[in-house]
Length: 324
Image (cartoon, rainbow, N blue to C red; front, side, top):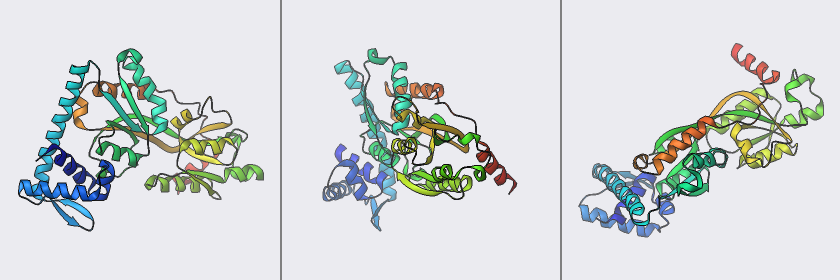
């Protein structure tokens, strides 16, 4: 067995398909298949069952997976230790995650680690949750920052460390005093046209349905007028007066300068819980362990943007729901 074969075996075992593993490793599928066949010949056992384009581990494959994870973990720890020993530098920390969370807490976490004097070097990638998990499996990132529940639990083979919770808020153009409206029936027609234009951030998960249901509950006559892939775009549309949007509070850090043109209101939609994903071995290695602790402290002390009290319209809708 070679280390190269073990890394390919791990990638396929975690990805469950040759297509996804090929994408993660940047290798062609024929090359992956050839290496897996060579590995199976070397160990004298079939490691995967091929079924409906999926790669399912056999009993022998599960045994090798246990040992391969320990081998790769040991190699990672040795590389990190030798890098410090030979160069006098701390390892590069590769971070991938939600841009709103990165912008809100990573600078503070770096300062808590000693700032520029610490010698820490970071490589930051802003990415969607699914991409973050792919980067972790492909060893293109050490730490991932994603919202809990945005990726199927079954697809995550990493330790999850709670970092920060931020409440969902209702972003409304500042030209509308949403908190002063006693009910939707009392709102002028031009105001209702804006309030009924709902901007949806596209998760591609069950959470998308929950947000749509919230819009339906609060604004029964609403229509979805935009599907966005970033909160920055969604808030930009709100600022322009195009419509309204339900967003996590920390996305306000995406707005350069200030929240001018946007008012945030408290809601009953709960909070977004952000977790750090990383392999177990990094929790024992410097500087990764220290950086995760710094992320937790930064998340604990993060300052949320100004949020106005929950408007009567949202309270009234919640009351109807509780008595229904």
